[in-house]
Length: 379
Image (cartoon, rainbow, N blue to C red; front, side):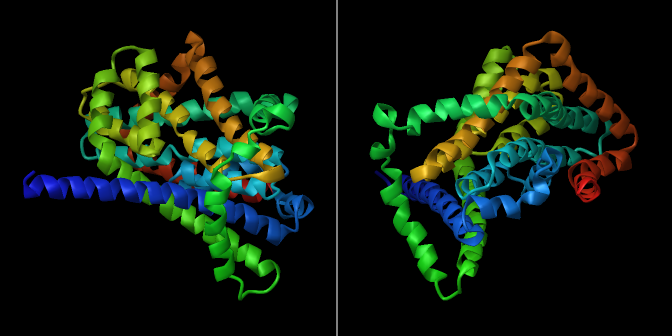
């Protein structure tokens, strides 16, 4: 083996070792958020008091959307939510926050489309391809949030399914959970490092540290996975788009699981749309697959939670999965609903291409200004 090949192999090995470490860091960070939140809040009753302002599901929805838009990563926000739920955050507050994270995550590919703003026609195509994701998620929330408030459908289904994995008696998998002994030393290390603080301040510091670790780990993990897999992801994207909705949805989910970022997956498509290689209609199913694939991070985060909180942590992660799967099945499955996000995106793109300041105002207003003002107003 010649020297260049040896260096390439060493680089790849180092890259995958770093990926493995960052996955471990995500698990430790989620455990740190959960443990810290329990210490800071004094248990579930304290958690309810802390989040009393978000008892309005609309506020919780806006909080999830705004937080995700600010950090530009639904993976980060959903991982934090899993940790908070395990620490005592009421699940009826967490569910709208999860839905809001779906809305906030669409900002990245919308920002990518702004890169085509110099060419009117390119911008129209790119903006339509990016905002179809926005409108799909908005319609999904408009349908499923009222149903969840009235019937608790997602929570009940997810809770029943999670019980199969972490319930009692013969169905319990707790005794087979190898994550706990691996993660516990890392969480303990963080806690010991912050032990110089007094009382509940240790818990607060653990939550902040955990969130920062999640943000760092998820962001870096996405970059390293892109480096390792982006060629494969691009090849899969080119092969799948335009070959029918099932192929598009499936490959969108697989690519997103591979790169651990729906923002990356959807952003890969925008330049192709802007250049006219693919239409918004062809890209649409791939975007929906990305919505499903991004739920893997919350599921991964839930595996770091053990004990009494394990079931509720897995429940909120499964709510994320079911919300996205059911939304795709319903909205894309029914022809009259399927067309609504497409028509809305194409109309907005046409207006935005003719009035570019209006398009920029949409990005700032929809993801930051409106959620912020509405949170203040509703509160």
